[in-house]
Image (cartoon, rainbow, N blue to C red; front, side, top):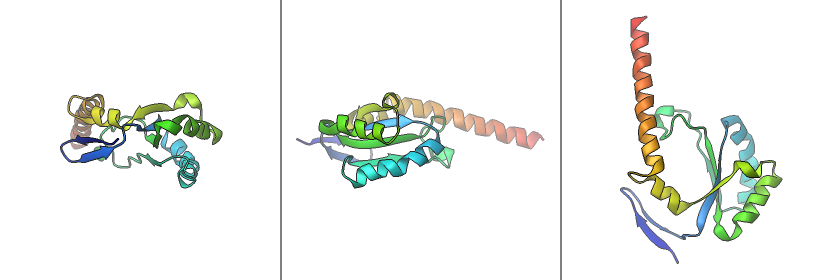
Length: 138
């Protein structure tokens, strides 16, 4: 049965059994891996996949974190999806599982990702301000 959730922008209707396998790594690694992951989606092993491409760090909610690759699936086939991710050359221990409802909770005010994002954004802006001051003084 679908659950309804609402945040400041979106109204969600989703199965509580949908989640994702995710890993953080270098952009080069993720870009090389993504075509293989995309085949799993095309072959309907996984529901969908995405990665953060962060070219503009000022637009990123977590500018100091490594890029993230997410592979979405149902709880009922998450073990099968993980096995397929291992078959395409990844390490089982690099992947972490998280339900979508947990992610939405983490991005709400007071949540882990929300708070980390606020801290990183402040640090990023302070760094940029410092760089501008240094450039002006040269």
